[in-house]
Length: 127
Image 1: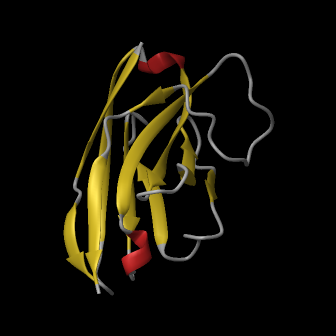
Image 2: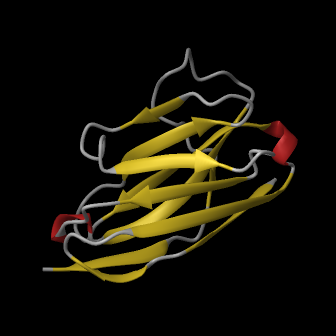
Image 3: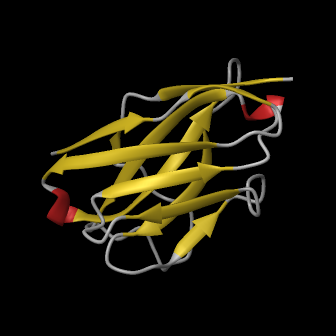
């Protein structure tokens, strides 16, 4: 099992920035990639960004490309989501997720298959 703990959410004004962090523990050697999703009230959970554990390959949803940046530490067990130029519609609960090495979900780059989830962190953008 892999445990994921997010931090860094909060309240920010429109146009501002926030940086989310996600620390993985447990059987992290079994993971291929980590990433971020979000879920706004009344909406489905939405994929945002992913990064491979053993490489620098990244993949972004069109909705956040150019505003959000995903990165990781050297070990690949902590990932970050730098969110700039935030808008009111970015208000949501943000979830960290991790994908197992096996079974394969297909060639990279692509959206993350979320095999493990964090508990989520609230991001509220005031207009």
